[in-house]
Length: 175
Image 1 (tube, rainbow, N blue to C red):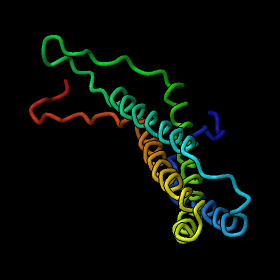
Image 2: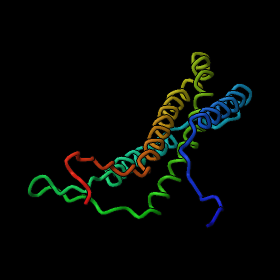
Image 3: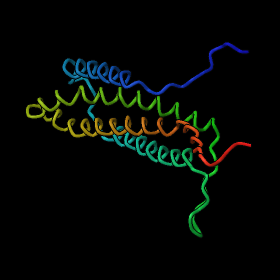
């Protein structure tokens, strides 16, 4: 019998995401409060990319969930779609790794944007640049939060369901 530990991919620990986000927020706060004039302006393209990745992962999560959780039932009515083909385990593993990486990346990005928002909000009345940086920063925070949610949903969709329990029939006797 092989006693080596088997590889396992454990669910993302929320504490890891919180710590990563808080660390990124602290770094962002230090950067913006000391070096704002040297930082490039906040722009919309990264926000759009983050939101696009979040949308992709949300769609992938829904599709993956439907395919993994399929019940193997025949179509209920004529012309209904047949149950989807099972997925290759390696595809599911790749999606799980993507989800774990995206949730951590999203937490870091959310922390980064969250570290900028308060400073920009306070300074937007005084500095024109801060006023123009605030909307994409808030958009980045929202898109990053959406990425975290979509990644956690995708990770959850990758879980293999427990086999259904056999319902025991009291009138059925084993022969």
